[in-house]
Length: 205
Image (cartoon, rainbow, N blue to C red; front, side):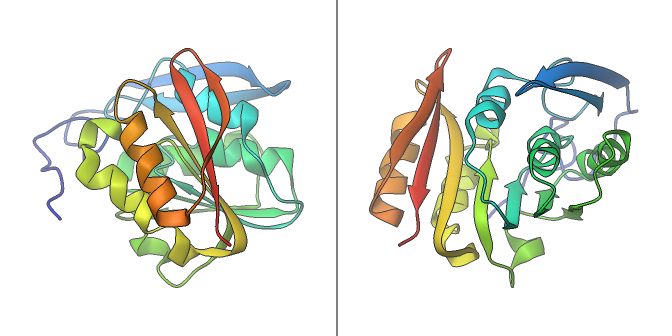
């Protein structure tokens, strides 16, 4: 599978070459205040984007166990999950080295210690791990050749009865992702929808 080259300077770049232009987001999610350090060459530098916000506001979390935030960006989804339930161990993964650095900084900034941040491509950094929940706001601009393997690779990394939750834009690949979920898991439901986004959930059974 071909990865983006470093000259394609966007948020799916593995090693951004541009100088980091830092920003700061202050926001409320599920009634809690969060502060996130952001940067150029990382997705949605200026605000928590609508898809990520829908995922955070509507995600289903287990009472205990392990959660994977795949494609974590600067870390809002995984950090929020860790804050909402301190009994969880949250692993966050991103291919973008700058995003990984930001996520580690943001975990400190938001005072969460039940998180672990790993750098790498899709499921490679967690190839021997299984999770109770996998959360993902996928890098749609990287193409379906990246997004669909996120879906098809999920069952291998889920415990029995584990939940896979992915946010999609209804008009940009949403139907294709929904069909792939149905094919891969044998089930899919729309957990929430807002502003052209849908949060899809499938259960491993």
